[in-house]
Structures are given as structure tokens and as C-alpha cells.
Length: 483
Image (cartoon, rainbow, N blue to C red; front, side, top):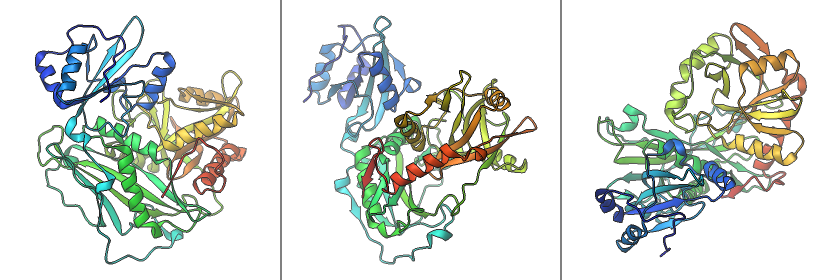
């Protein structure tokens, strides 16, 4: 049993007797960074940031109350990384934030359902192989997301019994109650990652730990239960291993992995679901760009539609974010453009491109060569490819790499001064996608991405594709999980 340690704890009343009575059935975790660097690391790594704070307490729990909780079977863990929902932290019931104005040291408390700690376990995985296997398609003829493999993974959850045993079974339709909360109130989320067959014929997943971490963040935001990330990842690896022949024997194609999590509460009440279903399906996908091409896209920029806003769910991968973007996409096409450049605020901040993160390679206002992308302020989705590009280019050390705000005024002024080199989107599907034109306020702005190579976008595409296919795995910052 770990001994409770809370830096700066004072013997003061912390919870009402009613709340204190609830604590014995919970697991409490605290995060207390001791420096600005630690606070920054925690805020970047923890899926629960200030915007998810449920309640603020002014003092820490007194030692006597903590000992009482431990005697009743609960556990209190304190460490600089404890609040980062790792594989030992599961279903979050409540979180509070303690801020000391004098020291600026904060403590986050997560009260976690004790029953869920004994949750999703890969060792309990049940595998029911399909008896009839489908014919494998030609990767060059694939249309994204239309062909699926022979098997799927499902894991059901309920507030009464926690996680059921994970089950890999033949691919089939789902059976849902007509009142399921996912169907009525969009209580759902998803992820997207890929498995690649390397030149050594081994199959690898590209940075799946980041997807699992983001999926947990989305689960918290949607009031769905969190899960043991390592255990779910092991189940996904078993699924890919079973359907490994569906991973294309090609360095230009891959197997797309779609974990999905839906609320299945059989009620029309608008409330936190007591039942949920996590499932994973697989789909072989061909190259995003045709052989030998690197086609740029044109963008429609207009504040008529907004993808995300402060306090919303723009930093989570939820289906509602995508469904509500379809009308804007249709209008962009009606204006002769292929994608939407999402703007935000009165100053027309540039945020994302379609379903991709955005990068601008330019000479900034200070005359510096810079690769810039909007910061993760709650509006931007923390993309895995985005993070990989930032880490990769920082490793090169050849130009300034920044997470900063960019506006349409910044862009138009830079275009007038011939300071723009390249603009491109980034995402799992394409890695990078160059931008050539932006329609803004009736004027078509030409982005000289293709005239400049695009040297940087092409280089990033080549380097990340080489890493994914294990051709040149030379950057230790890029992590693979071998199946």
C-alpha cells in the first residue's frame, strides 16, 4: 500500500461529512508539480486540464481523513505525474483543483471508481475466429473506409459491473436500443491510427500510445468511462495480429484502425450514460495521393461557420465535431474549393484545415524563418501527426518552430511581402497535404506552396513515411509498437 503524501497539506476541513462518507469507495489521485516546468509538463501530458475542473477546494484533505479512506480500502497516490490518466487510472467520477496563490503549486484530485480499477484486461480477451474469410482487395483500388476486415473488437461497460471481457469476433452489425444516447445526444468519440507493413515485412503501429491518451481525454469530456490504455492497446494489437493479412504488402498503403466509443444508455434522458460500448474496426486503405502526385488543395475561409470554440469540444475527437462541419464543406465545394479553412474570433484566427491541423512555413514578422502552427488552447485537436512534425523539425534545428496564433491579417500581410513559403495540413490520412489557394472575402489568395517545391512539406512526408514503413527509423522521438 502506498503511503499518502500531499505536499502543503494543512489540517483543515476539506469535505463535508456527506462527501467524506463517499470517499471510502473511491481511489484518490493527486498531482502536485513543484516548479513551472513540472506544471507545463503536466498540463501538456495530462488529459484533464483546467477546463475539465469540476470543483475547486481551498485546502488539501487532512491526514486524518486520508488515513480513514485508506483504512476503508481506498488508496491515495501522490506523484508529479499522477494526474495523467495512465494505465492504472480508470473511471473518473470527479476532479477538483487546488491552487495556492503564494506558491502557484496546484493539486488535482481525481476520485476514481474502485470497481472500475478491476476493469478492462487484455488477459481476459476472448477470440472467436471467423469461419468464412473475405477476399483481400487490391490496395490500389481502395476507397477510404469502405472495405473492412474479417474481425472486430468489442468491449461493453456498465456502471454496475464495470468493463466486461473484451471480445474479438467476426465483423458484424451492431445491435443498439433505439434510445441509445449515442444516437440521440452524440455521446460518442473515436480515434484513427494506422498499422504499416515495413520493408522487413513486420507490422507496426505508429505512435498508438498518443491515440490511446487522446481517446481517454475525449472519454472524460463526453462522460464516458476511461480505461487502461495499455490493456486496450494490447487488445488492438491482438486484433491486428489476427487480421494481419489485411495489412497491405505495400509501403504506400496501410491498415486503418478505428477505435470507437459510444454511449448505449437505453433512455431519452439527457444524462451521463450508465452503459457504453467500445469497439474497434479495421479497414485497409490505399495511398492518399496517386502515385507520383502531390496535389495541393484550395480552401474556403469564412466566419459563417465555426468548427470549435472556447469551452467546447474542439480538442477532442468526437463525431459531433465532424458531422456539424459537413454543411460548411458542401458550401466550400459550391464556391469551387476543396476544403474549409476554419477561422475563429473577430481577428479571424486561422485554426484548422478541413479535418487536419495546419502549418505555415514563412518568414515571420521578425525576419525569422519559421514553421508555425496554432497552439493547443482547447480549440485545436492535438493531432499525432502534428506532434510528430513539431518534434521532427525541432530535431533538425534548421529554423524556428513555433506554436503561435496566426490570423488572416498575418497571412495576407506576409503574402504581400512575399514572405510565405508553404502552407500545408497534417493528419493521419495524408501525413501532409499542401495548400495552394484560399478564397477569403471574395478574393482568391495564391499560396506559393508548390512554387517552393514544396521542399519542406515533401521532406516531412518522406521522412515520416520512411519511419512508418521502417525504411529509415533514425529518430528516437518516433515510437513504434510492433504487432
